[in-house]
Length: 475
Image (cartoon, rainbow, N blue to C red; front, side):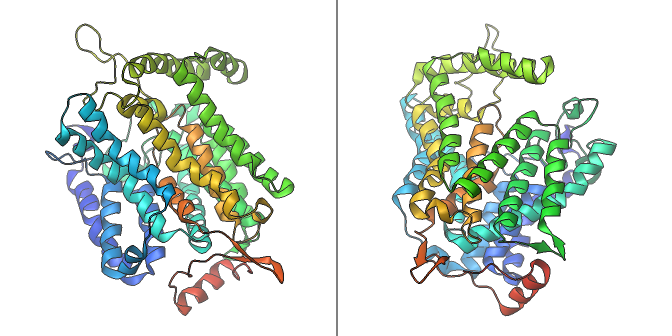
């Protein structure tokens, strides 16, 4: 019996019962908050396991969450779907979900194979993006999502500290098995927490995301306290925990994010978001074109972080070079599925390691898929300055949107060396894509609003929110 088959009854109960539980959740919570709760709780606490059925995409915690969220929306908030209107920016998500059809047809794999692969991307990318579009395409929705991520990070703080002290055991204790080989959790003479996520790298990036979201909420005074404690205290705890997660890449991205948010606050400019997006696009461009083999990056890592981190990066770079050469043979639409983008030796053994999300997408779906994936995440970030002038990005209502533009750009940079998919980033991208132009009141330039309606929240919800978080931001 494999590790993922241990504890089968409880794991199956959690995953297959989750959509039903979400329908109940939508019955008792406002739909917007039910959606935030559904995705964050599922991502942070449901087991790492997949069930495979003939002819269907694998079923895991995000598949269960997307289906449950759609069912809850259809039953209790159908008007959000009825009111949805597609924008030109949504074309990137549509292209990403459909490009496997072109990949399969161009490789002679047939229409059925292409549609099957498209269904995988629809569940993985398309459904979270659409849910983000219908729930978070206004300033209030993005603020609620940022608060949800911040609180999700805070919940993980004591769990991370537990595993830092006692080693990653929580997933095994609850579900009966470790998510990965235990050796991967040992780092710098101690442990790197994994909690209930796939890998310690995911935990590090999640804590960085929560810390940056909390910082933006706190500095803009969009959220000043939780349970009577200043938000700055919680932000400091998150930042310290992010560093202690011992993910070198996440620590670097935390520094980039702090610098970007500081520049936005004091210089009132969109250049930090442009710069982060350009860093990702520039790296991918020179690697795909073959203009740079990445050797200097390994040398830099050796000088800054030591031989161990340099070796890890060199393995990634070496395999990227092999996979890029393979992908360039079918550069437009890629090789399609069935492992055709990978490299095998004379006895049929796969000799490549795929760590980077961008090179995986390039091999599967070529330049079309690679460009579409980048566009889904980065175009909403770059369009924010057209929807809200950068001088407004520190306003309590606009700051969460600006923070997401930074966070999503950082996630794409992380994807240059990792493949740590997180659907909550896709939710945020969908929200930013649908964000309308921010309207300033001429008589009171400090006040801003958007043209979307406020989410349906009861007076009792508002009373509880004021008691927990203090008064809402003005404007």
